[in-house]
Amino acid sequence: LPSVQVRATREEDTVDWRSTTPLLRQPDFAFDSWLTGLLQDGVTGLRYPETCRSVAQTTCGWRKRFPGNLWCRLARDNCSTLVKEAREAVPVISFVQQRVQALRAQDGPVTILDLCSGLGFLGMLLAEILPKDRVHACILMDQAWPLKGGAREAPLVEETDVPTESGEVVRPSRKNRTRLNWDHIYNLPWPVTLTTRRSDLKLPSTHAQIHSKILEPAPGPVLILGIHLCGILSIRAIETFNSGPKCVGIVLKPCCLPAMEYVKQKTRWTLGAHSFAATEVCMWGKYNKNQWQGPIKATLAPRFRTWSENLYRGILADDKRYDKVPLVEGHYQDAYLLAERAFSESAPTIPGPEDCSAALVQQVLSAQTPRDVLGVPEEISMRALNRRFVALTKTLGQLGEEGDPAAAFRKVKEAYDSIRAERPEKTVEAPE
View 1 (cartoon, helix red, strand yellow):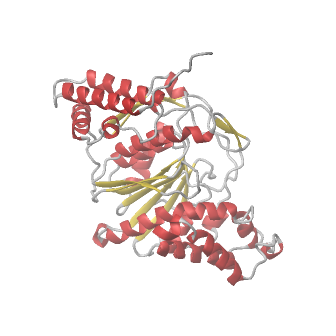
View 2 (cartoon, one colour; view 1 turned 90 degrees about the horizontal axis):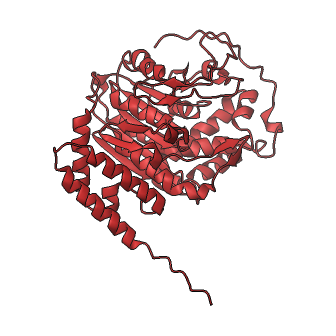
View 3 (cartoon, helix red, strand yellow; view 1 turned 90 degrees about the vertical axis):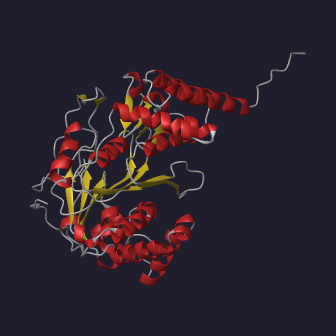
């Protein structure tokens, strides 16, 4: 990786964090016990006990060695952000640990690419937990990092629509004008090299830059991580993994649904051998000054499951799984998409239109249940079911004769009728 010249100076350590809040004034043993209990509470402690202990030990160690200003910034709001980030990182770290251990040492050290990294909590934890002799670097990519050379603030990207090769129109991400502070990345010692890269994942040019600047020069296998990728950023991450040389694993935790602008553009996304329409997954609504403006969030759960399952089907991998990790009771954004494939210096072969058509027909014909045939979750509204049925039958109607699409069409119709028959009929009482 190219070296980064940092002009930013280390923060003045003028804050005594023990005098900030009662929580942070706890003795080390009390704070360690409190934080370890939070991380091991619930499903994370049951599924990933060893990883939870490693994350807790690492995080508590930061409290002892970080400068006061830095620790107060990371532990703001009584450590609520720190605990949230750490709990969400546990399933990812567990996967990365297993993947690094399974890879052959002769293939070279692993490069980890953390997309939309934010402050870099995940990369920082990995840098402390992973064996340093097996990892080349953790690259923290986010649109809010300063540019190389140390500029603390930089003008935002022009907010103009950018067309992609597929005809999709995207708008560059918007971030606060104050860039992320990177002192904790470059001015502290880390067992594994941490480096930042400022890039907007939405832009088509970023995809080419990741290939030429990160994937191709990497000295060994590459793992791609994406936690809380909003909207089409999850699609960009999968596209990078599907086409990327040396990529051996990906972990995604999808976040927000794509915006309704893609419905107006009649967008249809193709990932690997899977294709789906924007009408199936998009939804209006957004945050404005941390206030949600849109439908009741609980009503978005079926649409989010459809979104996550479409992303999962689009990943090209030798082995993949869809894990549900309910970190917050009643919260529907609980999907982790994990996939791995064998190491290869060359880029994978992306299926062509003919391959996609044959794969779709085979997927329908081999499905065992009506919901698997249509590719819908257990709980789905009639409106979403109708949209999925129309989109699937329209696609099958445009295929050639290869793979018997007529039989697939009949099976889709039978599955649709079967799911509709499960719905209780609405009865209207006659007026007295």
